[in-house]
Amino acid sequence: MADKSKGSQPESKEPAGRSFSIRPHLFSWSVFIPTIVVVFLSIIPVVFPALIARTASPFHAAVFSPDIINPFEPGVLAAPLIIANIALLAIGIAYYRKSKCAARFQRLASFEISTRQALIGVVAILAIFAALTAGTMAREETWVDYAGVKARVLSWNISQFAHSFEPHFKYLLLSTSLHAFGNIRIVPFIVSIALLLQTYFFTKQVTGKRFAGLVSMVLLLQSDIFISYSTTASYENSWILLYLFSLYLLLKFWPPSPAPYLLSLFSKPLTLAFFPMNIFFIARSAMPRRSKILSLASYGVIGIAIAAAATALRANLVGTSISFDAFQFWQGFGAMAMQMRFDYVVVIFLLPLTVMLFFASRRGVMHADSIMFFMLVILMTAPLLTGFTEQTNQPYRFVSLAVFFAIGTGMLLSNKTRKEALPEEK
Image (tube, rainbow, N blue to C red; front, side, top):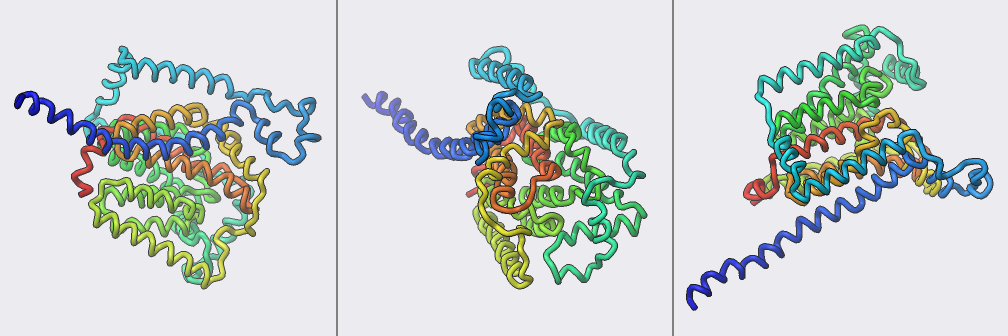
């Protein structure tokens, strides 16, 4: 009888272990459900470009009648998207049934390269990027906003930092490019190189794998929207570079992290909408409890300082009046499909990536839920901007989605799990 009682002890502890594991699973679901809904709404216009417009428009009875615009007419990427998603669903089922596909994926996930191989890969990717974009450096920009941006840079000086809430850091970079190098495109070009490198180092840091970092770099390099805006002064990438650097510092050494985030606001105020992402990232990190509290407090100070500065300068951070327009809100969900229509990889594989990140989060992969949350916030900025302000959605804002899509794909190869990080959190 004594032996039986001893043998039953592990069984008595098992329910307690299971009840403890429910929390992370519920947390994964709480991030996944809103993300998958928003991703699904964002790819509906890929399959049926006119469906959301016809449904949400107050004039749908007259203007969007079926004999004028067919809401179920498929888009150009409808067939590739459906076929790719069905194929990946079949692969996913095979994986979870422990077929040969699962073993192959495990081999891929465990694959790693040496530091020397990673260095060669990084240099090769940067060389390809330079070859793709070098031809643009000698040409004058043709973007509509370029004339206004160049005129503002020419009239700008550093003393204006304290007098208005504008993208002063962006003007500082462009002014440096113009006066130091004689070409306004040079610094945006350098910034884009830095963004490729930062994508590599951030992915390597969160996954623990150099190979994952290279995968993310390649995916960002193939992005049409990244290449299109990589050397432009009108829509340069310093804002997303600084934002990503603030996250990287949270992983490496958190105290300076608020500085690049604050600078990102002075490159593009849109990163104010990313503030919840930093809070979420800190909360889900493996930092010790005291460091978490202090880093959260430091970002709280930034929030208070921005609100105080906006009040003192009487600045409208949104830039327009605020009112809700239901039609424009729903139209905003079509922005990604329209403005990233040449980013075939991102558009076609965004839904499968979201699902795979969810399963990675369920397995305890570190920061898989953070990347899901980041994609949710980025996709929601489009409907919120057009639904609550008079601003229009611009394609360059989706460079951030291309960056986190690339990082999210690298995350699927991660070796870091939350279980391993738990002792650091105590």
